[in-house]
Length: 162
Image (cartoon, rainbow, N blue to C red; front, side, top):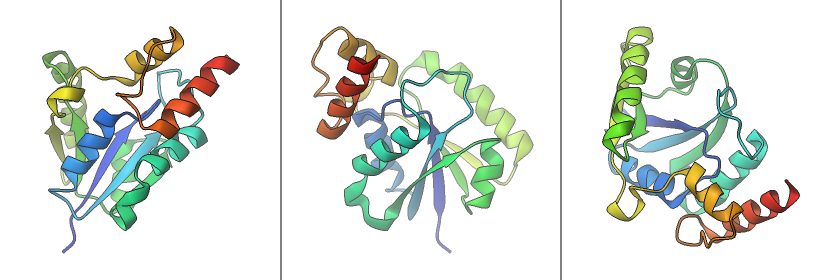
């Protein structure tokens, strides 16, 4: 039986931290679906189509091991429809734990057959968040160490348009 996992998020934009977690997840699972959320309390800088495109660019070398797909509605419903057995979530710091624990507990209540798996990023990405990357870029800082070159260019272009 093939084991598939889903890695949900806003990915606004996708960072090396996200990419690192996806690669770590592939050590545990045969296939990973990077699920780009369309329903979010967050107000993303990029459209869902742009975020999907950025993630596709980030994982272009992954072949068929990583699929990128937008989703709306309940994550557990989307995860089941995609045939996944687990939800991957990243923990950068202790401050992430309480929220992620609440999500995992709710997801378990809604879908007891789906497991939540928490992964930590490599130490060089433990402080990287999409919000911080956008802020640094907005203030003219160099974000080349945080996002792939193509995403950096898309980010700079988007911020110039704002």
